[in-house]
Length: 226
Image 1 (cartoon, rainbow, N blue to C red):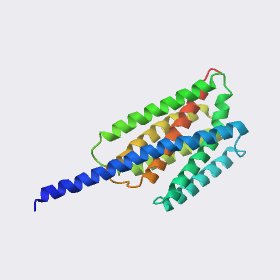
Image 2: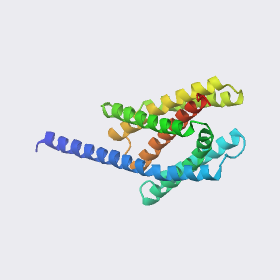
Image 3: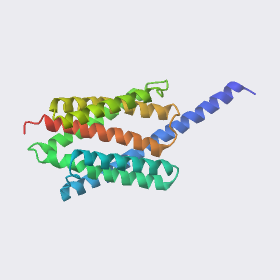
């Protein structure tokens, strides 16, 4: 038996599986835009303003994300996982309507939203290209991303409490960079076989894109002439 051929077959099968997961992830990611837009439109039309003080909104958001994450992970191998993911994106779109409503109140609000959407798309395309050219696993990068997230989040909370706009702007810039790096990590995990479930992969990348878009839109809104 030619063991080299056996190795090639196994490697080819693994590559095919990874490509299938990546393809399904991109397809499902595109589908998640529909409930996100629907949720955002509903929230804007209802004039949703959140749940009072910022700390209450943060608690509700964190609780919802944790709850949906648990449910999606428990059902990631069935159609229920897809349904929960779409429900999650509907909720996130509704939540995003608070920021969208504030930006739309600006004179150039619709233009700023279009810029943020286009910028998010360009960032995703760029990070996906970078990830596709990395041939080694970035699994060790995870702990640094989480540490960075916790540090920036604490700084952002400090900026809100102390009413320091400059610090809040800096945190938004850092968040955009952090979640851009997280996209590279997530796509690399798929390509290296570290992530084999497209539902879990879609949720991870969706959260990255959501945060990039919202922080980019916040930056554009804060720097608007209006």
